[in-house]
Image 1: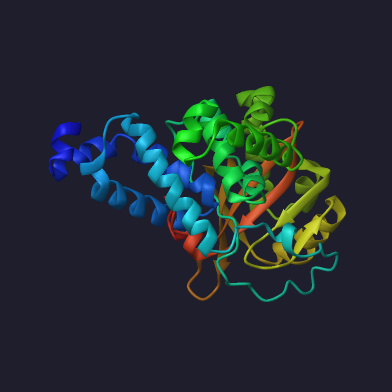
Image 2: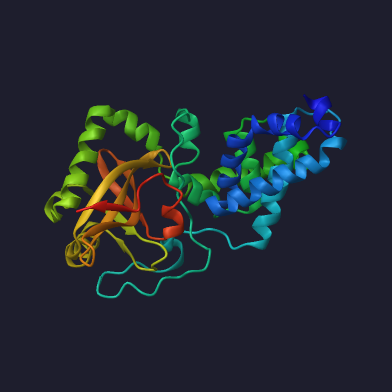
Length: 322
């Protein structure tokens, strides 16, 4: 297959690269924090690899060779585009829900990704929203090293070949990256939190949240929140920190609207497609993708993504009948 691809057989190259397409896409998402940017990077990487295929000498595996090209592409795009952030990284939390601010439409916001049903435990850990957000806060080269070493389990020597640097530089960057990321993520992953809950308790929590949301039952929502819960909603700049502030927003603003929800998963975490009622045509229209973060059976973060461009990446209908 490699020989055919090196000889210019496009179908052979397509089959060869296609075997790694999904994992390369996940790699680009971890590097860039945006599905839009990740898809752009993946397309550029696969095109670049095809153009370079004739020069592939077999000194590394095809997989490592493709990761070198995709990592180079992501590093280049990282230098050209704004890093992806959370609203809580950009502005101070608000207490008054009366003014949520105008949407900030520049492409700066971290984006969620639909769950991969075939992903294993470790793969889900490495796309959790807090982990992806933390990765975007460190220099892009450190980000690449951490992903190559810890997520993809390349040795320092192998990562050095991919990044065209020395193993010592890789080791130094890895230590710095690991320390910086550890300071920004919860000590227990979401996969571990969900495992400790068990399927029955997890399902009960999700069902309770869905019922309370649809019934505008603020008290029940409050019972599900941790004291330090936060609520973010890019591209709106407003976000709320602490249970009391979140509950004031929920009570005074959010539940002014009737809602329907559909249970989904995003970034390996429980999530909901949320539909708000349109009195004009009596339909419920998709208004948010809400991703939940949990700790000890309580919700610590509701991340509501309001951008329609994000919604279209999830396999959910745009409207629900009343």
